Image 1 (cartoon, one colour):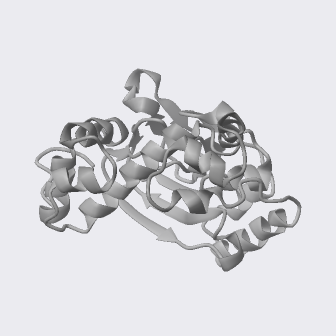
Image 2 (spheres, rainbow, N blue to C red):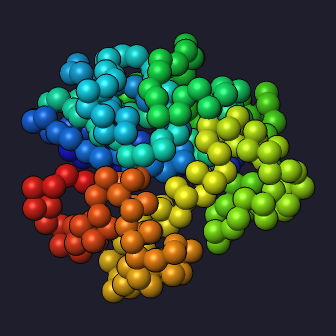
Length: 259
């Protein structure tokens, strides 16, 4: 299975993280999808069915039927993506609050879900056509002019060091309850949940750097209570232990595990 990402235009960068393309190989495959606080619009362009299991519950796997446009909401745990041979998945990953800004879709209704999404203009633009990303840029930039950014400054504040929700609300000049309503509308989850996911993503970045930093030191630096706290939260959002993923990043050896 191969995977590639492409950056959006400069005006879209506050809202869109990347355009992505995932191609399966000649055999079925399974991949973990880690919680990242983002939402995606995606299409299965292949002829084969793909399935996504939110919270890794394969008994409730959702079919990504070929040709249809889907909205994948913010995840509160990791999920599993199962693909058949010759599956072609492509999508737009929106930064927290980005999809709500451009479409005014209340994100709380899509948490841990995968639902069909209607945009008859966007859907044809997601085909693998010449200048596809340029055309997507132009269309989505047009949607910026029709709305206003409803998540002002909050996302940037969250990109720094972990902070209590009360402190974040104070910096945003709103009450904690108002901040929670803003988050659930824009991102789908409460700010405390998002901060935990953002911290998990920071652990991922540390592990990918393949440095020699200990997990205990990482836990201390990122605001976890201890090593066990980091490990438990990491397993919730990734489905594996941080030591397992660190070993895979360093060696490339999966030992029968999938990542």
